[in-house]
Every structure is written in C-alpha cells, then in structure tokens.
Figure 1 (cartoon, rainbow over the protein chains, first blue to last red):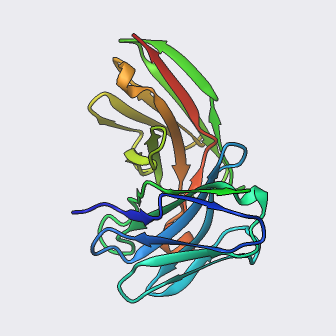
Figure 2: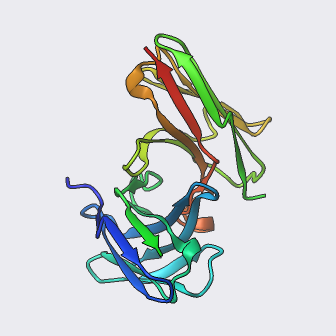
Figure 3: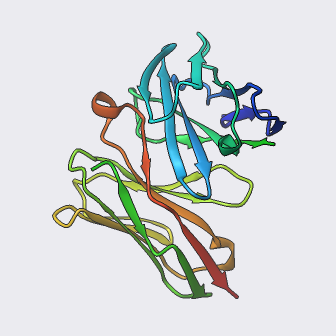
Length: 115
Length: 115
C-alpha cells in the first residue's frame, strides 16, 4: 500500500497570505489528523477529520481550518499567515475506528516558511 | 493532565550499547502508548506500541516497558547502531470514543549513536 502523501513538500509564503496544504491518507483509512511540529513546541495536534466531519480540534486559533472530502483526502488551510506559523505540518491517517485503528501513520510533512 | 513528559532531551551512546528513553503521563484515560522514530526531513514513523494490559513488549532490538501504577513507560534500544541515530517521540492516546485518533506527544529525545 502507498503511504500517506502530502503536497506540496515545501512552501514559502509572506505574512498575511493564506496557504492550503493537502494530504492523501493510506487507502482505506478514513481518519486523518493534522499536527504542527516546531523546535520550540514539538508536535502539537491541530485537528482530526473522520467521514468528512471534524471530530477533534486542538488549541489553535481559528485561522487554522481544515476539511475532508468523500475520498478521505484532507486539506488544511491557514489564513493571515504569521511568522510563528513557520513549521513542519504533518498529516497522519489511521483505520480508526476499525481494525488496529490505534496505529497512525504519518506523511513526510509540508515545510512551511513564512517570511 | 494531557501532557506526556519525556526524558532525556538528548542521549549519546556507543555502538552496541543500550539506549533508554523514559516517558511519564498523568491522564489515566490514556490506553495506548506508541513510540515514533523521526529522521531529519522525514515524518515520524511508528516504531512500537503498547497497551496498558501488558508490562513489556519486544520487537527485535526495541522493547517498551510499561509501569501502570507509576504512569511511566520507557523505550529500550538494545545493541544500538549508528543507523538508530534519530529523534524519538513517545506518545499517548485515550481511544476513539474519548479522543479519536488524537496523540499527545512527548518533547522528543535526540539519540546519537557513536560508531
């Protein structure tokens, strides 16, 4: 099976702009989660989508949003970018709630740099 | 109560030695404890995981030890190799009904194995 794919891999944006990141989960996985990774804050949960519905949300401002499509692919959007949004954005998929759904598999991430 | 504390922040061992990384948690609702390995430029990769109904799980050179009463768990890497040099993250989850696929991560440990 192909792994989790994320596009683009690298992105450079200017403060105030908005950005959309894309994630394709492992085939058959319906749960998609997003995480932000920074040197200072580590890995922090952004939100989770299941069956096109946001099921969980982390402690991030409303500028961070996401959605999931009927084929389980997911996008996250960050509006009005700030310098502090520079990070590696990771997508993870799992087969929850079926099977060994606890296991989550991460994509390679999108490196976002805000200047 | 949602935090997972990880130590040490960095670890240097000699080839063939044992690497030990520790994690502690507060939330007694956590019921799944995975370890992830991350190489530079890559997403975290699931290494090994344990549920609280067992005290130890071994997969090859990697062993998780779990102490439910102390709310601690640790990763042991036997016969450490230079190729094991990476950042290791412990994590915890409280299950689909409670928190979906959400993982709470430790701060990470930078492991360096000298040849």
